[in-house]
Each structure stands twice: as C-alpha cells, then as structure tokens.
Amino acid sequence: MSALPIIDEIREHFFIVGHRGAKGLEPENTILSIRKALEIGVDAVEVDVRASKDGYPVIIHDDTVDRTTNGSGLVADMTLDELRKLDAGKGEKIPLFEEVLREVHGKAVLFVEFKVADAIDAVLKIVDSMNAWKSILFISFESDHLLKVKEYNKDAYTGLIYFKQGDGIILAKKIGALAVLPFYRMATEKAVAFAKKLRLMVIPWVVNDLETGKRLKSYGVNGLTTDRPDIMIKLRDSNLLT
Image (cartoon, rainbow, N blue to C red):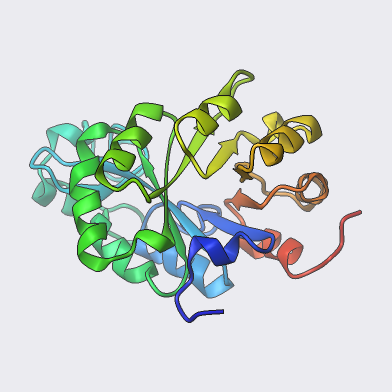
C-alpha cells in the first residue's frame, strides 16, 4: 500500500468516513473536527463546500451561518473576511477548502460535497494545483454538479447522494459515477446488490450505531459515513458481522 491514501486502495476493504469531520464529537466542518476524525483513524473525511460572496470555496453545510456559527445571514451574501470573523464553535473559524485539503491530503481520502455550483471551479483548480485527484471523491445530490466535475477532468471520481427511493443507482451509473451514497434506510440488501452488480461503490450515510452498521456491512456496502467514527471504527477493525 502506498503512503498516500487513494480511493483505489480504500475501496479494497470496508472503510469509515468521518461526516463533516467528527460531527458527533467536535464542531462540524471545522479543522478541529477534521483533526479529531484523523486522530481516530478514519479512512476518509467528508466536508461540505459553498462559495463566499467573493468566490472563495469555504467549508460549511447550510446555506446560512445561523446554525453553526455565532453569526446570521446567507453564506453567499458574505465575503470571506466576514465569514472568517465568525466563531464556528470552540473558537474555530469557517475553513477554506484549501486549508482542509492540506490538512487531509496524505492522511486520508477526502469526500467533497458540492452544495452549490458556484464553488466547483475554484475547488477543482485547487485540486489540480495539488494533483490530488486520486485521493478525492466529489459528491453531490445534484447530478449536474458531478457532470461539471467530469467536464473538468473526465478521470475524476464522483459519487451521487440520494435519500429517497427512485433511480439514484441507475442515474449514478448513467453519469459515470464511481459510487452511490444513499441515506442508510435506502441501502436495502436488494439495492446494495443491484448497485454492486453495476460496479458501483455503496457508501450509506449517516450511521452512528453498531447494530445498523453490522447489518449494512453484511449486505456488502463498501463503507459507512458516520458522525461517531470513535464508535463505528470498531466495525472496520473487526470481522464481526452478527
């Protein structure tokens, strides 16, 4: 195994993805949360990307800053300077995408969820400058966002997220995605088998209890996204399925 974690390697075993870092342990989508996930030993870290008013890709889930910071207002209406003055929890700042990539690169795979199209070009240019393509999975609920990534680099790894019954698996295959990321209740044994038949990775979200994790692992999912990597890491490091 190479020193650099890449998607082609983590997919060869059951893996754990830290949701927004370690959301259940530290303030979500902060450097503190990401470092906690890495300290626990996750295989991958998932973060959400939006664009500031002046075009900088920043790490935050919601379209407003209200829930996760001491400020209020739309992310898209605030400049980077305004966003960086906010407290994102425990004195943490809202990170820039580049900060997060530098923090994770070489230690784990990074799952980058695009919440808005405005952030895509800036993110891809940074990834290109660091030649980090093989250690990033670009994910979104929006297939158009993933197609835009593929237009920039046809070899980029993408994954389609979905949370309702429907044609998510077929659509993922159609747009050339590597993976599907279903809400865990949608990851039935039948759905997982169908996705695997189409050679798609299956990475359900968000799973925080071992019983659910064991069941999904027994179905053959590739990995799980979790707020509590400290708990779910036990599934990776054990062959216990029952």
